[in-house]
Amino acid sequence: MKKHFATLAAPFALALAPVPAFAQAEEYLPAEDFDGAFLSALGAMFTAEELTEDQQALLPLASTVVGKLLPEGAYARVMEETMQGIFKPLMGMMPDQMSVADMADALGMSEEDLAELTEEEQAEVGAMIDPVFADRFGVISDIFSDKMKAMADVIEPGMREGLSRAYASRFTRQELEDVNAFFQTPSGARYAGESMVIFSDPQVTSMTMQAMPQMLESMGDIEGEMVERMAAFSPPRDFDALTPEERTRLAGLLDISEATLEEHMNAAAAEDDMEEAWPEEDDSAY
Image (cartoon, rainbow, N blue to C red; front, side, top):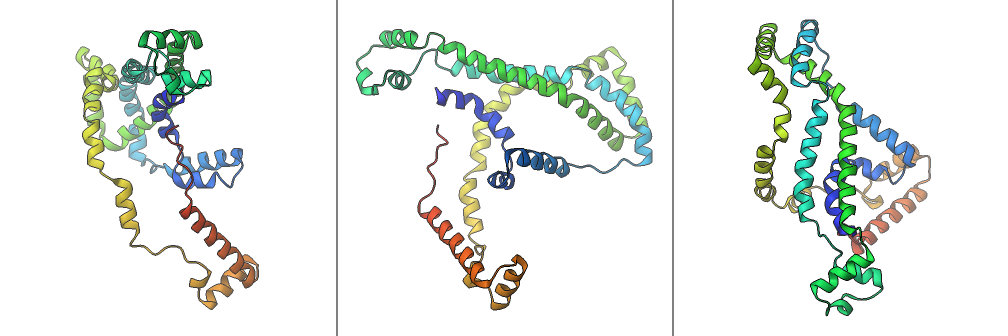
């Protein structure tokens, strides 16, 4: 069961995963402090230049244009159609009954013990153990859809404001007036109302997903390439690599003795060596 849940949840887990630096910081901060620090730093990372006076003057016109491109509720519609486009194919891939491994776990038996069962018998056993097996995936789909809709309601106002500021900074008054005039025509209104939603159209998502294997292949062995390039850099220095002057200065900055500094740095180096020799078990498959 866990593998099936992971299949559905993986894209969202990746999207919400903190950047590596914060993932390391999480080990040393209480949960509430880490969440606050991460969110504060995240907001500070993404800043934009202030609009000039001329651009500020264009903001009302730009907002009018954006209001036609992204009317109230449009982003939620985009998210809903996108989620449907993602989950419908995924749900088609999901099994409609328990796997032999799951059945064996539930029964306290090995897979070999159930090897003689026919497919019909497996289905019968699975239905007795978990009659609502297939329904669980529908719940997962509904939960994610509901959450994404709720997120859209939160994101949309800020997106509308950001788009307005972007249009005010990128287009002249004449260009904005021309676009607005076009949006006031029947064809322009139709285009404006569909311009964002159309990116979730099955025609677009299907072609995008078809390109996914080539895209992943083009990325190549990123981890291997990173390791190779990082090899050109020297590792962090241990106590023995510090000069006598650096040891004295570092101990003074930390308000500890040089002997204590040596003890701590050597212990840290030994721990790193131990982790390299005995890496933690990779549980990503679960």
